[in-house]
Length: 402
Ligand SMILES: Cc1ncc(COP(=O)(O)O)c(C=O)c1O
Image 1 (cartoon, rainbow, N blue to C red):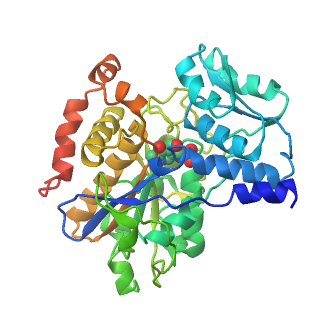
Image 2 (image 1 turned 30 degrees about the horizontal axis):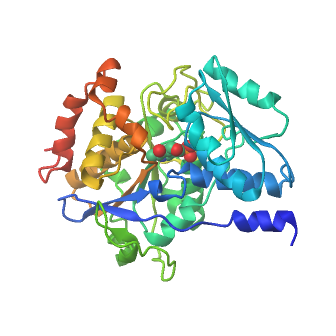
């Protein structure tokens, strides 16, 4: 067997991650959390890393012995180091900031090398100068395998994710347009050339015509937000038996919409809303993993149905609530997605709609306890978490937002 064939075997799809049933006392509406913290390296970046390596190997850019290089400070480095070790490839990551043993350790334990660079934005040029193949998760954002796996487990009405590279929302949006019944036809914002009014109105509080459910022609299964119970577990534990893919739910007429939850300072909400594909705020996001100072090339606005702006303090409040419910020390990106999902649920409830919403848990790690779960960290950033906790309580209570 050639090295390439063996490598592609190593990069074959992994075990599916479970769905957690988020307790929601709203009749007819179900909220499920796709738990990517259960990936072998603890985050959604595991899928990105697999896709980037696959792409590079299929394109002949990485072969036996090629040094693989990336510029990143986060989960991506751990996931890529994990795959590099399995492929027997040297791995070098350029991280922003001063040398930090705590940040280097997880990569070094997987046999990778960390180089630290200041100022932070210099990491991209520094990585390009390292001899080897620069994976370039932003410049070459590769769509990954989340959509196929998720839609084999459940056929939701909405999926809510964040956007960093843009790959996850593009993966989901492309899949539903290829497989999800008449999604294109009813897409809120089918093309970048849509008029600004259409784009601006595609937000929570939209007119009923844009409602998710009960479209003529939907099958009864689709009306119920069809799902396969075997993939779903209760928060904080339950069955680990999530490994079979048989009997994936189907159903004619099913369609799903993709919502992106976007934090403060990020270019995605204004870029999508105003239909400016190269919009830039020039401001860094405070929410690790999502929100970018400019619209990245991997973000595909025409594949996204709605972008929901989420205040950073709201994302933090929702991350804390998520931890209370699931026991997982999730990052604020997962909280940001949950907040937007709860706003969607509230909108559906107010209109008397039923259906299923999936929100993504991007990662969970002890280190988040010192950031978004820590009051001092939030206070130093001027984040009024308590105010958003009140609204959160309303959103998750049976009274809804009323
Ligand atoms: C909740 C959530 N959504 C999405 C993403 C990543 O999105 P993308 O594929 O755009 O980099 C992350 C972070 O990796 C995340 O935590």
